[in-house]
Length: 227
Image (cartoon, rainbow, N blue to C red):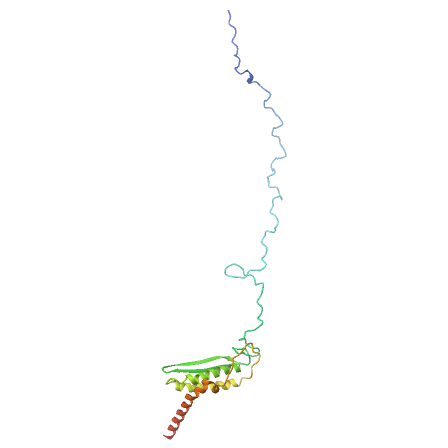
């Protein structure tokens, strides 16, 4: 008895048989064909599209105030409000036409030196006041220095000789002061000359030692003349 031929056993999953189905790969509409995106594409550098733009509003404009040459490197802009000349000139400013008084600014004025002396038993002190003064201011300085010297200048051994010499030198300075004409064009208040020297309390008190010095001096001269 012949045995029947062996056949392939049936698949345990008959619904999932692997058979050529409708999905074989075949040329379709998605094949790569030459299209409009060939190189150069949209990211290629096209001429003119991304060139350097023209100068814009953020470029550095020239400074409105040119910097000056300074050591720190930061230019100093000119002041927007320049300093105007003063409406009222200084009192010590010279008047036009010559030097002015250093106190009131009046002219004419002259350079004078008024001297003084103060004796203090052991030590002594020489004083002076130099400056350019008009007639009233110079006369005020002279009267003050002269009256103080007549009172304070005798109280020392050497001061009894220096004081009369100082008073005599001031008299020559007084002659220069009296030659000055009346001042004009004063910019400020000047010094008050005040009372003359011999009408002041200090001047009247200074007449006592001055008179004593004159009597001693005349006595010495008379003794030398009769010796």
